Length: 399
Image 1: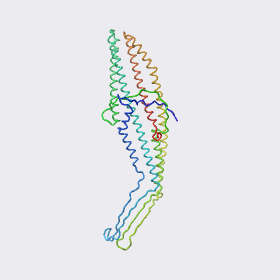
Image 2: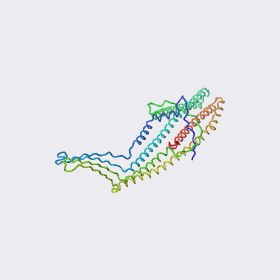
Image 3: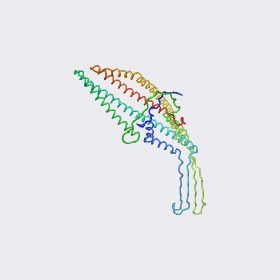
C-alpha cells in the first residue's frame, strides 16, 4: 500500500463570524444545479430498458364472396407475440447494471471536480481578503513614512524625488487594492453561481491554521479512476450482450377462424416461428466486432486513466511537500530575519534621507515577504485540498 504526504483539509474550522468549508460544501451539494443534473442522469440509467419485450400484435380479418364485408363466409381473430431468446434478458440486465454503475461513477467524478472548483473559489476568496489587508497595511506604512519625510527640513532635490517616489507607490498600491476588490467581486459572483443564487456570495471564509503534511494510504479504488474502470466493465458486458444477436427470437401466434357459411367447421391454429439470424450472418458479426473493438478501447483507456490519476497524485504529493518546506523556510528563517530588521530600524531616529530610506525598505520588504508567504500558503491549501479530494475512496471500498 502506497503512502502519500497529505495535510488535513485546512478549511474545516467552525466559527460563527464567517462561513466554514464544511457548511459551504453542504450548501453547494444541496443547491448546485450540476449535482441535480447528475443525480437525474443516474436515475435515468436506472429506469432504462435495455432488452424490450415487443408489444403483442392483434389482427382481425373478414372474408366474403363479394368483398370483406359482403357475404361474409369467415371471420378471423389473430394474436401474435415476439419473444426474444431468454438469455437476452439476463444479459440485458447485466448491461443495465453496468450502465447504472457508469452513471453513478460519472456522478461521483463530476461531484469531485465541483468540490475541487468550490475549494479553489473558497480559498481564493480567503487569499484575496487577506491580500487586501496586507496591501492596506503596506499603504499605511508608506503614508506614515511620507509624513515623516515631509517633516524633515532637508530642502534638497533628493528629498523631493523621494517624496514623489513614495506618493507614486501609494497610488500604485491603490491600484493593486482596486484590482483585488474587483477580483473579490468576481469570486463572490462565481461562488453565487456555484450555489445557484442571484447576486454575490456575502460570506467570509474561515480557515484553520496550516498543519504539516501527514502520511495517508492511497485507496485501492479511487473515484477519479473508477469511472474509466466502470466503462471498461460496461464495454465487456455489452460485448457479451452483442453475441446474443446470433440467438434466434421466437414468435408465438394464435389464430381463430370462425366459419359463418357452415361449409367448413371453425378452427384454432397455433404457430411457433423461429428467426434464423445466421442466414444474414454479416449483421450479428458486424455488431460483435464493433462491441469487441469498443471493449478493447475502453480497456486501454482505463489503463491510461489509472496512470494519469496516479501521476497527478504523485505530483500533488511532491508539490505539497515542497510548499510546506517553503512555508517553514519563510516562517522559521526569512520572516524572523525581517522582524529583527524591523525591530532594529525602529530604534533608529529618522533624521536624514539614508535612515528614512532604511526605515521604508525594511518595513516594505517585511510586508512583501508576508504577502509572498500568503501566496505560498494559499497554494499549499489548494494542493492539499485537491489531494485530499482525489484520495477519497469509492463507496465500495468504504463499505
